[in-house]
Image (cartoon, rainbow, N blue to C red; front, top):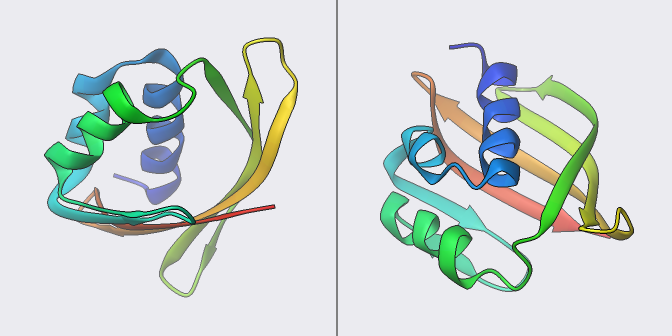
Length: 108
């Protein structure tokens, strides 16, 4: 699967609370490096996004997706339920055989 398609599916699944589709995007040993924590493993990542993230009523607004040396970089803003900007982000995705193996999140 094309890396850009995988990345767009990642945000679509989070925003739709479609955790079955979300889980299918990851390698079992995925690692997500976030500013506030590191999450290791598909089941742990899905559980965090479904049950433990601070604000689940958000929407990702993407402004740019590009390939950069084997990494797919997505930039955008996270919006709350009212459409207000919570913060800007950059996510760097490593994707192998159509599955996300690593995400590095930076926020501004």
